[in-house]
Image 1: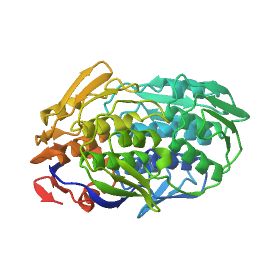
Image 2: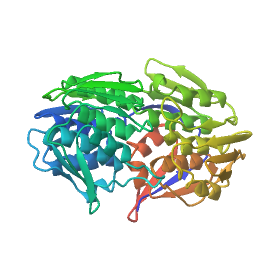
Image 3: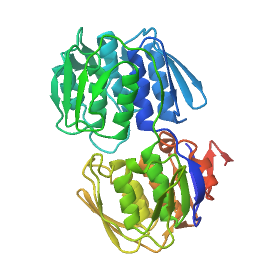
Image 4: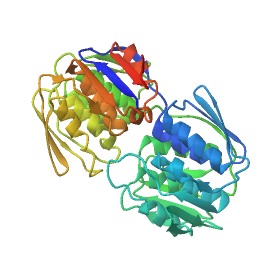
Length: 422
C-alpha cells in the first residue's frame, strides 16, 4: 500500500496547472453513452476514478481510447446494460450510467454503489425521479434493475439538491418524450458543464446553473467534443495549502467565479487573492486567522472542502468553529489530525478547532480523497517527516499530486512495495 513521506516546514511558492474537474469528467464520460459514434473529451484528469469509469464504459461495450489528457469514447454499439459490482463498488459515481443507459437502451442493471466512507448517500432521489419518468426499478441481489421502454417527461422536485440525482435525471430526461422540469436541482458548475456537453449532442436544456432545469426531450443524439471545466475542488485545495504554509501560489486555470465563498473564507483568514491572466494567485504573509465556516450545497462551501479547511485552520491564530451540514460521518479523519497535535473537539455536526503554533509529524492515514489532501496540508505544517498511508484514496481525486507538490517547493516522496521514488 502506498505511503507518502512529507517533510514539513516548506513555504509553498510557484505556479501549477489545475486539472480538469474529476466530478465533471466522470459524468461527461457517462453521458457519451447517449450518442452512437465517437465523442472526444479533453482536459480529462489522469486519476484512478476516470480510469475506472473508462472500464465501466468498456464493460458496457463502448470503445475507450486515451491520448494524453483526452479520451475518445465510441458508443456506436453497446453490448451490455450491466455495470458490475467489482467496478461500481470502487467508485460511487458509476451510478450515473443508470440514466443514460435507460435513455439509450431502455434497460439498466447497476450494482449498488460504493465509494468513500463519509456517511449515508442514499440513491432514493435517483430512483424516485426516474420512476416519475416511467421507469420500473427494483433492487435484487445488490443490483438496481431498471426498465423503461419509453421515458416520459415529468415534474420532479428533489427533496435535496443532490448533484448525482440531478445528473442522472438530466441524462435520462434529455431522451424522454415531452418536457421534464427538475426543481431544487443542484447548481454546481459541473452540472452546467454536463448541460453544455449534452446541448452539443443535441439536447434542449434550459436553466443550467439555476435550481430549476427544464428539459425538452429529443429523439436522437450526435457525438460531440468537449473540454472539461477546471477542477474547483483541486483549485481550493491548493489555495488552502498556500494559506496554511504562508505561501505564494499561482493556480493556472483556477476560476474565482466557482469559488466565491471558499475564497472569501481564505481572505478572512488573511490571504491576498488576485485574479491573474492565467488564473488565481493566493498569498499569505502571516499566520492565518481563525475562521468559522458551514458546509452547504453550492453556491455554499462544499463539504469536500471541510477537511481541507479544517487542516488549514489547525495552525491558525484563534479558535474556529466548523459546521458540517451534508455528511454525518465526515469528521472521522479528525483523530488523524489529533495524532499530529491538532486541538480539535467534535460534537454532533460541529467541530471546534483551537489553532496550535505547529503540528508534529506522526504516522497517519488518508481515510478518503479529501481527508488525504487534508493530511498532506497538515504534514506541510508539521515538524519532521509525516508518513501518510492509504494514498490510493488521494490518487482517486488529484492528478500529478506529488509533482505539483514538488513544483511548489515541498519535499514529498512516495513509498510503494518496498521501493522509494519521488
